[in-house]
Length: 486
Ligand code: BG6
Image 1 (spheres, rainbow, N blue to C red):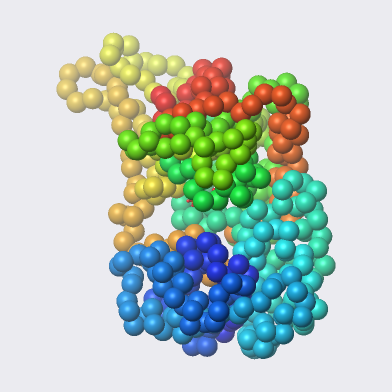
Image 2: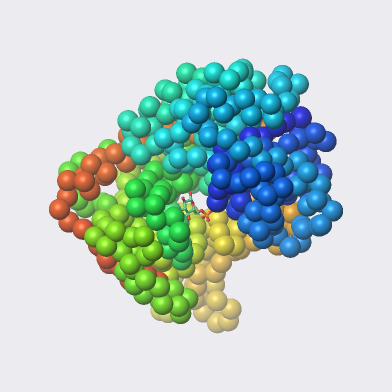
């Protein structure tokens, strides 16, 4: 479907996200010759002189993020012509005249406002867009995370933004929903008959979802110190993945059909009690260590760090979903920075066979296991038991592997590219609805409150490891291990 003419205005246009993700994503659409002739990208900031100067920054900070195989000087030149810098203070209503002058009028043109700004500015910017006449029933607004700091602030954002834009105009980004494998999980579950009958408590013993990063906080200390792993990753990315794994089959791929099912999962998450908060949640913070053989400092010694910080860089949680499908199946979620490896995966472990007819010694029995890899290599691995060749009946686990890169030679799309395309096409399925956002905050809030009261510090773990020993104990109490530690 061809894109209609649009103007995309990025608040925070000179920032890190714009340079690393948004502009390279739009370049990629340019390369695919997907952008309408007049489409423009207006980058809003306060500190750069004019468009010519801004383009120097784009050259330096955005261009290196374009994959070599899609870079062509002529395409780049064409792309840069679409970019315009608008220097203005987004909090000053009078400054919006510059944006009004720069944007082409609706309804012929779709106007998209991408708010890659701190959430404290969302409401101000939306009000100013409204007062300047830029917010119309045809325009769209994209909200970048963090979408609040807790339930109250998320509600406030929903309320304030909702006064200006209707729910169908609001695109709340969770870039994990734009990842290829997440959509492949939908295809796997609802495009095949094979798994759905088994996708339930009768056959699944437990589910692990891991997002591990070797990276530390880098130069994002200002943000991270007020956020921590729970707000940065668990409340959004991990819970969204859990929803896609656990939701009932939606009646269609329309936005509300999918989002209704995700919401039901969030509402069915077992609420925490004082006992489960103490037993089923582990909070960690990295100390110095070695990642890939390189010595790295601990979190409290990072640049601009608070030397007594209690911010968590690791969180692991065990939860359950109180529904007929899932009752009693533990879901283990974990994420951390400065871990032993960078990977994101979902592991579905099936139950043991009810009775073994194989009595031969040396068989190594393992439960069937489906691993859905989001990164680094996108694919599926299914562990099955097979007979080893030769005499006798000795069984051994073997792996069926599907590597998406090798199986589909088609060019890949980065998460932000797919999501931006969806915004431009007005498709909301991969974006969070206001009630989903609030339900996710409501579920994690008791953890935040518990940590605030608690005298204990986050448990230290050495950089380059799989996190605190308490996280291994958390899953170990159920007689299990994290996949990478097995
Ligand atoms: C972001 C977090 O949302 O996701 C970062 O703010 C994190 O802290 C990043 O590094 C991870 O995303 P990805 O796509 O690199 O796994």
